[in-house]
Image (cartoon, rainbow, N blue to C red; front, side):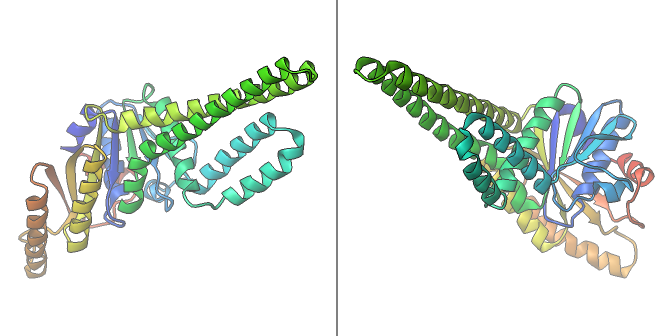
Length: 326
């Protein structure tokens, strides 16, 4: 089922409650698609990265080849925010007068730990990964942070687009005001060259700021278009057959539904096998009760159960064994 989904989509997001095995399932799906002849990019957006541990090798913020046809990278929110602020600082230093550079640096330093900074920076990085990778790869797989973080990340493109739109309107208003002052300077007896020249420089600066904001808005709008494109993008919720993960899955599905994001598959990981002794038989029966609640709440979504493995899934060989059954 998962391989079929991976072949029909360009982007897959894997999300769910922490500790249910999102990294394992998303990685196995990525390997299955690569083994089927596709070129795949596996991306972790979870601050507590597990890709490197799972594949038993170092994976950083730049894509590396980890298996034939499979590249991977880990997006570090802190590093991404730091690079993001550095780019902003350099742009502002070029745009603003030298006497304001100290204030710019002070503002950037205070913004480093501002609420939402890491999420906004991470979102821009995700947008860049999608834009740069959609033509190079047959499939991009995102292994996301636990449910709450992921739900916010999914709705953030629309929020950031609206916020950026507000900034653009302010810049346009400033441009019009600068033009008015420039024309006023020409019409009075004051020195046209001094007033007009200074205002023109200010106008050029405002226009450049607006161009930066327009570019940023297009990036967010493009990501949003990809996320809500049900023909090419889907969300897979991974869960355990336990009460809290089931309830959190239902809530996450409602949040994604409100954001117009398609959820086409539920993966129940580490299912207790039936007919394997009294203890596991009782465990399996309890899981069935929880999954009955899930099926009643989300009847229209396909479900795939992955049985509990006898050993930890670690390394490419173990992941390929799991991938063969997807």
